[in-house]
Image 1 (tube, rainbow, N blue to C red):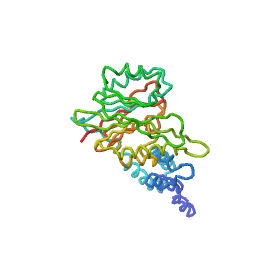
Image 2: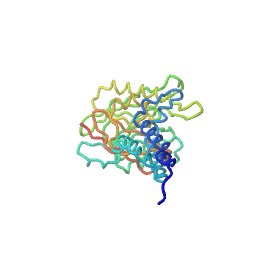
Image 3: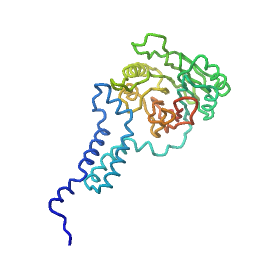
Image 4: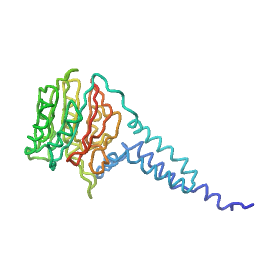
Length: 318
């Protein structure tokens, strides 16, 4: 009978120790991502922007552990799996059946390079939403959107480069100042309107927060974060009980830079709806949030002429 040399036993017991450590680190990053320092370079926000993708290393580690037949690594892997499932597993669950007090809303950054605005408008209207929020509206393209949406959406408001189209009457329309201090030129990317729905009045906000950039200095999100703070303050001061926020927020709901909003508003309960970039979506930066209302399943719609995918969500009113 062949016997395993005594010196090999410790090596076998220690096989996969590096894999086990990697699994523990992944679990720690998932569970304690808020503790990751944001300086230098807003690295904490960068981690949170792609937080759901930490599930991929777990799959790689599992395959590697099976290949190496490492009991130690296999014993460690359930921890990151459990944490990921706790954070994101609920997004896979089926949505509840539509109720009588729901609004279907669509959010879309239509892109200032979109060569088919009329086709984009028709594609969004095909989903038959109650509200359509658009960003990156150029003056030259605006008439095409207005004409294509006029029949089904007789009520609309536009301020700067953002707009809202509605099946229901709009009142109290005004711009919302979310311009960062460093931006001195003309810049209007926020509006507020009161929507007179069959189920009561709703304050609808449409916003386009500044872009973020990844470069040698890290994750440049200071302007986005400042704009999110200003928008959060506006929502906090809103007198209408029910609020729906639609916009390209240039951040995911896990990103601490959007905490002024996510701490005040409900986020989608179901669905990932990765919306950017349209060619290979890796993050949902187009958001639907609400106060005193529930955002149900969020989903993407078919691609348009934009570099973003449209997202649609059902909002249950109180």
